[in-house]
Length: 506
Image (cartoon, rainbow, N blue to C red; front, side, top):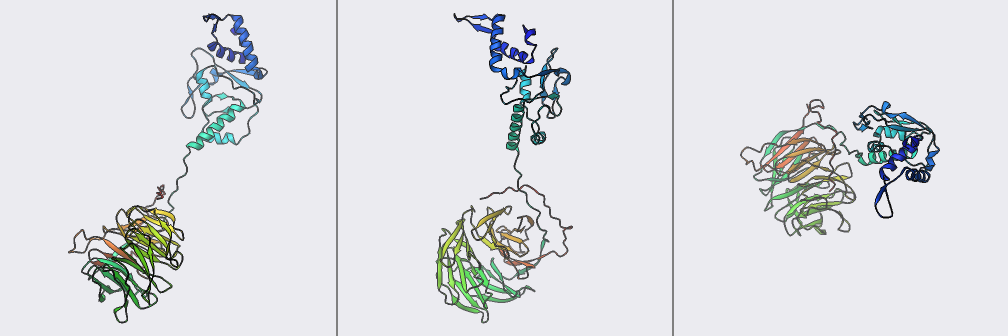
């Protein structure tokens, strides 16, 4: 009987599959009895007609698969292909015509053969084959394995499954940091002493001839920028001076302190000409509007106040922060006022309405420093968790500058894109603004006679030429840094690699 079925290759496949599942027949009394040859023939004829009719007419040829595929052959991935049975030849079908959609996928005579048909092509081979049209009489050759043919429907299914698998497993290309601009390193070249307490604030006058500092010794001192010599001391505050700024529109110096006072000094007479009363607690910072006569101050009373410089009137009280406001900055464009607070938020304010435009809540710790880029419409904020860059006018997040793991008290940036961050532990980091690359770290020794714990940077600023960097520190000194003129890109190369950026959005 088996010899008769093997006259046609399809009959061979069908018989072997049916013989495994129809070896027994259940009689009416429920007892299994063996099937005779006539019953086998009858059931096979019905099965062939109903399920395998569409492929019975197809011309087929037999090839000795055992000869073409050595025992335990493997593909390019090391998977074994069609292990040959001991002492038995495996027949393989090669179709000579295109198959129709109604064609049934043929069942292979062994489980290992059936599983091997489901192996997807390699990704490179899949892409090549996907660009070709479906062959009408040819064969696909798998690298490292023997020739084999598949029905068109199965071929497309295998390719689609392979493409879907590859696309699902293919990792998206992670963003990489672009190569940063090379900046020469900065080196300490002068230490200025004279204050008797922590130096809390610093500002350079518009003419670049002198600079001014405020200290915990309750004095304001004016220093010659070129020589570092003391020119003048101003007394009047009864507590730590926390902020100083020199006007570009008039010969005025403004100061504020922990005594709740905001003072306007006339530098022609070196005395106070105005006081601005209104804050209920220590005033932590102040800034002048660049184009109009407006002064903005921020305080521990959780508010910022806008003052008319000449009339001393309080124009607006900016309320909304829930903790001390540590820093404030002004600019001519909208939003014209930016504040950072110990409540971890940054607020962008409408100067005319005196109301909040945007509240940025991305920081998780106190924001003690904010700096505006002198050329770009962007700004940065400093906090113990991260330095973050933002884009005006809506405060769109740009990127994080991670690595300065300390309480950041001050930020400053120059037109060349050098961002400086000074921290409470005396460390100073220098960054490339565009890429966020930290190209230098400085930790200067404290002044002799000071405790090691008195190592902290409270304020820093570039001079008007941006060739000098001044820092106000806890060891009662002002340190001046300059770029290293002898440094080149060869002597101080950028140790940058296109590493994957781990962006932490919020």
